[in-house]
Image (cartoon, rainbow, N blue to C red):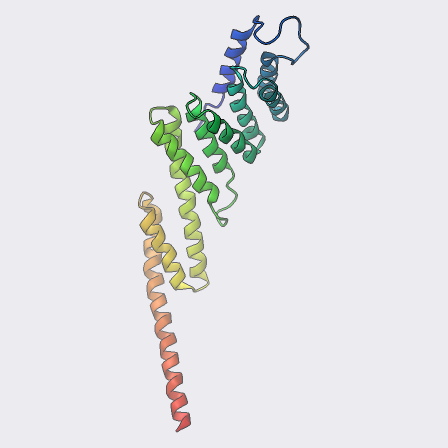
Length: 243
């Protein structure tokens, strides 16, 4: 699925066109990269050249030096994108979260919330690790789908909601299978049941969990019965020995 994250760069380019020739910030000739439009253009150029560290530098400079520029919000979101492209997902999450807190009604909110969710999603490492990032991503995607249902980002979010739930379910099954392999059938049964009860929208996972839950239950009962029989037999032996 291709995400239109270049939208912000196009908006920046449009902003530069509008601002060209305006003496909105300072009058007279300015040195290179000393106005909001020059910093924005430098950031856009760096992004297009995949020089993400440089883009981060320019967009950060614009945000810090010109906080009240009408074009700073776009640069702030582009900064988050630059961090995303560089693989620094924690920094991207911080930038997007701060933007959402300061601009809760901004037109970029569907995009920002979606990208925040995607940053959490991209932090996935392996199925055997706790899936807190998947839970966080799921909440952001769900929010976009519910609050901004008519936007293209709601469509993207619905797709990623399914992917998040799959990874969470796979994590639960991984743990359940581990309990199964180590013959801890009672614990395995509980995990399989959890998948059956909480992931009905993923029938292939529920089918697998259901079959393994049935087997785990019977094996657990066999183990309990054998253990109880061994205890009872031991008790009788002790009594006979005493006699």
